Amino acid sequence: MKTRFLFLFLLLLLLPIAAEAQCAMCRAVLESEGDQSMAKGINDGILYLMLFPYLLIGGIGYFIYRSRKKARKSGEA
Image (cartoon, rainbow, N blue to C red):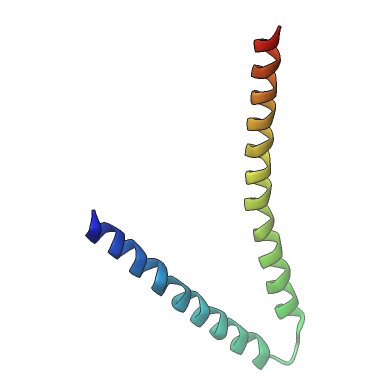
């Protein structure tokens, strides 16, 4: 159990390093181009992809809220 926790901790510790390196590479490629339309497109794509996890979490939260409210109402009656 201790080794599993240590492995997970090290994995999570090293994960941001890889992600940061990729961002630096993307930024260097996009900044080297004279036309900034591709950089704007990449930024819009990132924002578009960020939207879906929030929608999923919100939908699941709403479903749980609605089911608990319905269960509470049926328990009172």
